[in-house]
Image 1: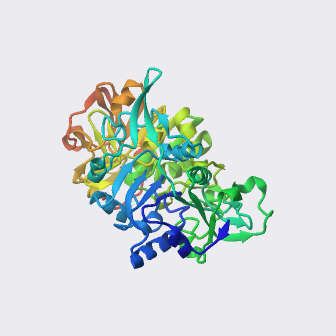
Image 2: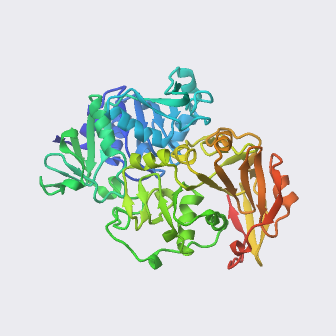
Image 3: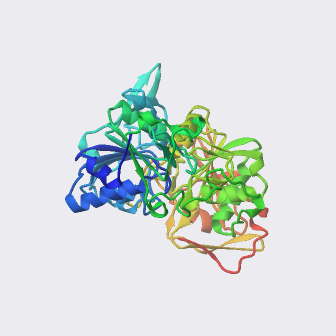
Amino acid sequence: MKFIEAREVAAKIEDGSAIALTGFGGMGQCDAVLKSIRELYLHTGHPQNLSVFHAAGQSDGTNGLEYIAVEGLISKVVGGHWGLLPRMQQLIEQNRVEAYCLPQGQLTHLFRTMANGLPGHFSTIGIGTFVDPNVEGGKFNEKAKASGDNPVEVVHILGSDYLFYKSVPIDYVLIRGTAIDETGNVSVKEEPLKLEILAAAQAAKAQGGKVIVQVKYVVKHGTIHPKDVAIPGYLVDYAVVAKNPAQDHRQVPSAVYDPRYSGDLVVPDKALPTLPFSVRKLIGRRAVKELTPGAVVNLGIGIPGDVIGPVSAEKGLLEQMVLTIESGVVGGVPAGKNQFGITVNAEAILDHASQFDYYHGCGIDLTFMGAAQIDQYGNVNVSQFGGRKIGCGGFIDVTQPAKKVVFCTTFTNGGLEVAVQDGKLEIVREGRHSKFVCGVEQITFSGKYAAVHGKEVVYVTERAVFVLSEEGLVLTEIAPGVDLQRNILDVMDFAPIVSPDLKVMDEDIFHDVIRSAPMEVT
């Protein structure tokens, strides 16, 4: 193991190299190294035509993968999510890079597959979605479709169809830790997540690649407790010590280091902020009524990650469920927004891939997820819409095997304004775009697959609740004060089945609200 400067790392990467990155949202990226790669390319034109492999989204909107989202620097990307990477999204949307989107959990497991020296791994996850080669094969733009590359294949084993996710080359992997000792042992004590760093390092080694670690501290050999060693020294080739942690090694986007997020400090529940009332909180209030005591629950990004946790905490429901997030966190109250994936007062922080083992194998009892488009068949799209290339993240890995799925979304968007008065909902101004469309632009959740397998699926909005049946979407509840025809049916692009037992949503959702002005949802 050798200590080197970030700029020296950049100089070692050859043109056409395949690099793997670890991280989650705005956390866990090697920003000092990524900045140096960008700066070297802009000054010299090298390294160029890199292939990038990553599992989770790799930025909070400004950092991480965004640093190297430069045409010419990157020629190919295989990843799970780009919702907070505007420059990378633009490269993908304008066909300036070859882009493939695969489920985040499958990508974390692919690291382990490659660490074992295997050509790929089998899974049912993704069948019937855009990842399925019978649909789109995970090819996320026209450049990928024209390439002839097929990262996923359908195989038939023991009477069942599986998707075969192929291993990818790794010349360099960039991983992050908190401290490294003199022989290369790495700890992640101040990191908010463990992620897939061990599997990624082992995958690189299995292919003859180099492992580069960025850390904050160098400590004496033997001072890291053996159980706290996340990566043993024999896996590390180069170590970079971040000279400016406030810029290049922030624990989370909001702080250089906050002990609440790494489990080093537990705060009283009353110290946590209460969410102000909003249309998103209204949706969360209805959604949490789907909870059952003792359920193992997953929260997705958006309304679920921002609202369900705090609403559950307010209602004293957190102790009645086991809360999990795909990043590996168990328990606590989610931070949400651009810090999705971490919680305050976590009970456990597992490695990324192990969390997905449970999701894939057992299937959680209940997951709350967002939705951008919903169609008459119950299909849901969160990955590609309106020309935007977002990606699926862990959405497919979680929703497909889950025993029950609750989608949380506003009925329309683009200027929607609602108000609540005397326990009734008023649509002050309708949004310009309905989320209930005839045929989603891309299938991220297959209603057909869910219906065939008898999955319980609920779609919660501020004004209506639907459930999935074999015949399609069924309207089961409407909000008090809402007109069925004018505010629901006329706003949808298709006619749902209206339940003969249609009822009014529980009024307690709309009470205890003090609001003097309409709530706008853009």
